[in-house]
Image (cartoon, rainbow, N blue to C red; front, top):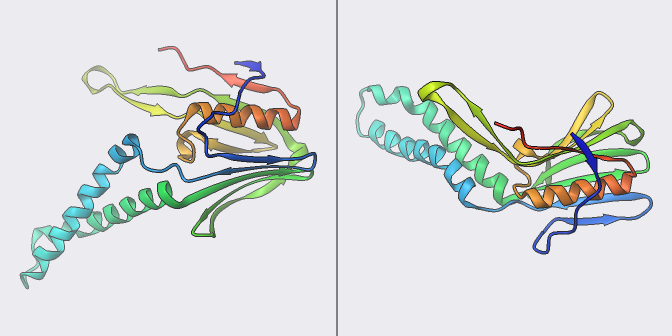
Length: 199
């Protein structure tokens, strides 16, 4: 780990930061479709298609057949497919810090769907930026890997508030890096940078 001060606003970012001496607001728009997201939704899409086929198959006969056993996983696939696409196309994220507290809120069509309870600003002890990195798992022929996006994490007392990473709200490392530096500067606290682990 190291502490540093860095970051210039990316020229193509859609993240909007508003700040004054009294507050810091960051609006993070939906990430939108991209090849990574498209590939992640292939499996739910297949399950969704199977559910339609399965429904038609069950409607064409009065007998209970073995395909009925797959009906529940198929509907789970539809739900997962819908959740992924609603999230990437419509979920907005708001990070707010004022003189007294810090909060993170997500909205869908103007309705709050996730709100981390506000935490006292005075209890922010650490600001951490973790670079995008690859996690390897398994052994031998079963080795796999997973790409973990960059993440901004704020330790607030006994909890943490994070943006990016597995949250899926920012996929661009440069944007997370810039947001981290802006938060660090506004709070006048050092930014700790976690380098990608060596393999």
